[in-house]
Figure (cartoon, rainbow, N blue to C red):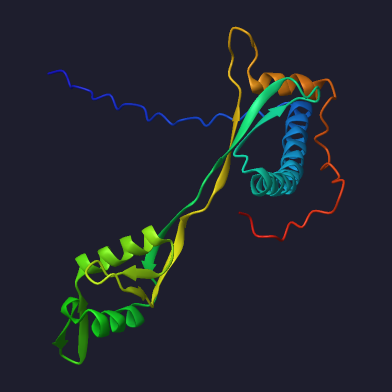
Length: 218
């Protein structure tokens, strides 16, 4: 009788390959470029904040003086347009800012639209929401915290209500697009001007007169 032999599988151990280090000169160059670019980005971000504040201030002044809501942005030849800037108006709506004062006015002036219910440990005031919406709509239409009674024509000053902004006005900046008459878009046009040294991006342009940048924008 022939004895059977069992062959034991050999245990394969993964051999960890040693990583190949990058070329020292190339690594140093990439790290240097990366940090230098970050320095440029930080400088550009700070400078952009300054220039953007000045630009919006000047646009607001132009709007106040001439109600101008749009302007072309040209290259240094003052002819080639590579972008536009447009004023987008803000929005404001009437809101109840002091509910207690408003509720007291409704109670004293329009008691039919005022109610209350007693909850353990407190009393809850209830207002007719349809009436509240009617008053706020009237304030919106009037542009001031006043409500003209549709039945009597009597105008009431409404306490606890104010017209508050819901969206701040802003300026929308756009680059021009390519067309048959303009084979280059706005980004390409200004890139050429920058490369030619025609636009200085290293410093903010000095104003001919001091700017009162602390003024509230319109």
